[in-house]
Length: 275
Ligand SMILES: NC(=O)c1ccc[n+]([C@@H]2O[C@H](COP(=O)([O-])OP(=O)(O)OC[C@H]3O[C@@H](n4cnc5c(N)ncnc54)[C@H](O)[C@@H]3O)[C@@H](O)[C@H]2O)c1
View 1 (tube, rainbow, N blue to C red):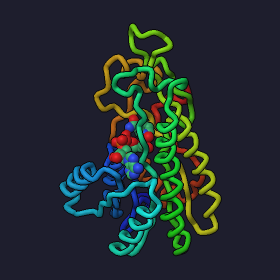
View 2 (tube, rainbow, N blue to C red):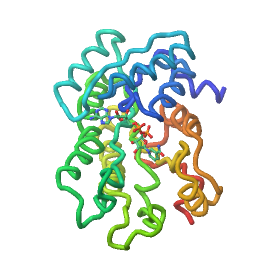
View 3 (cartoon, rainbow, N blue to C red):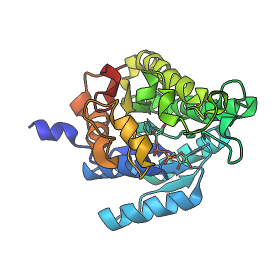
View 4 (cartoon, protein in one colour):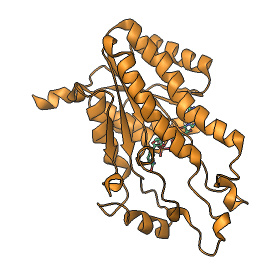
C-alpha cells in the first residue's frame, strides 16, 4: 500500500537544530510515522522545551544531546551516544543554522555588505555550512560504513534559489545607505547547502545513501504586519507558511516514499520563487 512507503518504524533520525522552531516539527513528523527522532542543539533549554512537547505528544522520551555542530569532537561523541542507545542511525536532517540579525541592536546598518563584520560571516558559515559538512561526515560516514543505506536531508531556503528582496526589510524614514538588509551570509549558506546536497547525493550513492534538500519559504511567527503584508505580495499563495506545513515533506524525504529521489531540492515556498 502506498501509505506503507512512509513507514519509519525503528529508524533513527538525527535532527540538528532540534531545539528550534522547525526542529520540533521535523521530529514530530518522524515520530508520527514510527521513527525515533534524536534532537541535537547547542541550546540545552531549547532542547528541554522541544523534548517536553514531544513527550506530551508521543508519551515517549526521545534522546536529546547538547552539541555544537561546528565542533567535530562533540559531534563524534553525539554519534557514539546515539549508537549506544539506539544501535543504528538511518536519517540525518541538517537543520541547524544561525538566523543572522538585520541589526545589532544599536546599528541598523550593521547588516549591510559594506559594514558586515568578518567574524559574523565566519560564524554564520561555520554553523550553516560547516555544521552540515561535519554532521554529514560523522553521521553520513557511519551510515556509509554500515552499508544499510540511509537518508540525508539538508534544510535550505527559498533564499537558496532567489536573492533576498531587500525592499522587505526597509525601515521607513531611514536613509538608503543605512537601511537594514538580509545578510549576505544567509544567501551564501543556503546556496552552498544545495551544492553540498548534490555532492553528497553522488558521493555515497554506491552505499545507498540518498541526499536531498528541502527549501522552505518564510514561516509566520508573528512578524511585523507591514513586513508580512509586503512578503505575502511576493508569494502566489498570498501568505507565509504555517510552521506545520513542512511536516509532509520531511515524512516524504525521510522515507521510502522518496526512494527514487536523490540530489534534488524540494521547494515549498507558496510559489514565491517562480514569480
Ligand atoms: N523559519 C523559517 O522561516 C525558515 C525559512 C526557510 C528556511 N529555514 C531554515 O530552517 C532551519 C530551521 O529554522 P528555524 O526557523 O527552526 O530556526 P531556529 O532558529 O528556531 O532553529 C535553529 C536551531 O539551530 C540551533 N543552532 C544554532 N547554532 C548551532 C550550533 N552551532 N550547533 C547546534 N545547534 C545550533 C539553534 O540553537 C536553534 O535551536 C534553518 O536551517 C533555517 O535557515 C527557516
